Length: 64
Image 1 (spheres, rainbow, N blue to C red):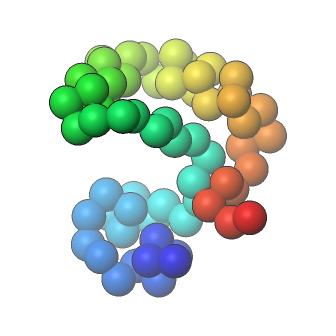
Image 2: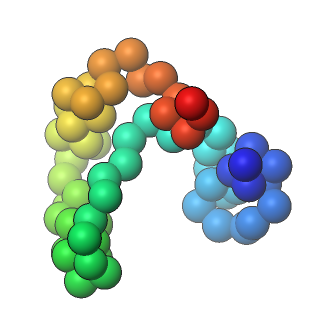
């Protein structure tokens, strides 16, 4: 996976991201952009609670 190999510069390489613990499937690009803006406005605590509600053990869901 490109995340672990750090082949593409960007957020994941800048912040040394190696695991995927949360994602959402959004039906269209406009809705996805709207959702991303909404999430970016949330506090860190609210984002953590969202992740915990779906993935309480913070397991890497990029494998499997």
